[in-house]
Length: 124
Image: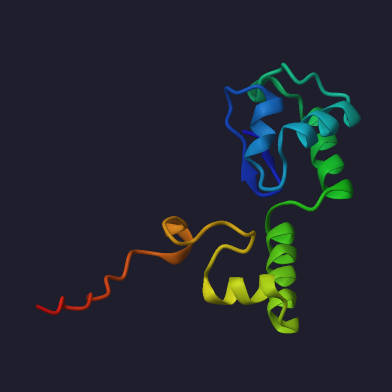
C-alpha cells in the first residue's frame, strides 16, 4: 500500500487519479508531479516500485503544500481577513457566502437549517 503525505492511496486506481486523493492535488498538479518524478500516469498504485513511490513523495514534499500544512495556511488566511475587518472576513464571521452569491433564497449550506420567523397577522 502506498502512503504519501499521510494518505493511503487506493490500490487499484491509476496513479494519476490516486494521488488526487491528497488534499491540495488536483488533475493538473497530479500530471505535473508524475512527469517531474518520471512515473507513468497509467500504472496502477499496486504496481508501483518503492523507488517510484519515493520519487513521488519527494516531489510533493519539496514543491507543494498539501494536507495539514495547506489546511493551516488557508485557515490562517481566513483568520487574517477576519482580523483586519475586510468584507470577506465579516462574511466568514457571520457564516454567509463570501463571494457575492445571492442569499435571499439560496445559500442554505452556509446559513444552516432554516429558522422560521412568525409572520404578522392580517388585520381583519
